[in-house]
Image (tube, rainbow, N blue to C red; front, top):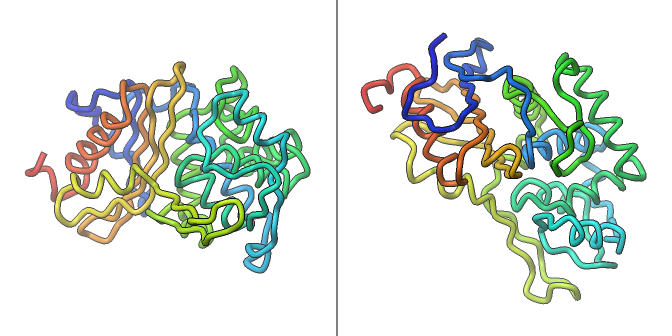
Length: 268
């Protein structure tokens, strides 16, 4: 295991060979941090494990409680409106691609009745994943809370579980998802994973970043978790936290993939 290169600005970083479950490089990866909107990776995992494929077409009506909560806390949203009817599948994509708090809260209410009950399921999942000593969740969105914390190693464990779940993997690897026109949105909606769309132009030849989720709160700086396939066909996990911009997250992830995927060191 190596120390993370000084080219990486993020205060916390971890890089893992998923097939070997081996940490190839790390920096303060076991320090407890605020995961910000990376929290929604666990939100989608817990929701996906609670539903069947047949449930994806179920409908959910967006409530004033959810839209007011998002407004009051200045959350990032997909843009669903009060009383708008959406599908469970749309909620899943909304939670990840544009980091929509409206999507995450809709999932919480659909699955568990309210956010508190859903957060209990999130903490049960952390326990099942063996990370509950350091991973504790207080909301399903990633709002700052002293009880919404984990380490980068914990987040890598969560992302690994997501990549093993067919539905979750489909969600987090999607770059663009289109929602058809409706009365609420006559021109439809286009949900976009900005991180995946931007990083693909910067990674070395032979590397494909297939999934990713960013986050930001003042207390954690810009952070991101991603998964890439290397030229060798293996999957690699990369998680970083505490840097100054979402673009710096992309540069740090590119640097980590370039430096630590075997055979690419010469491109660093």
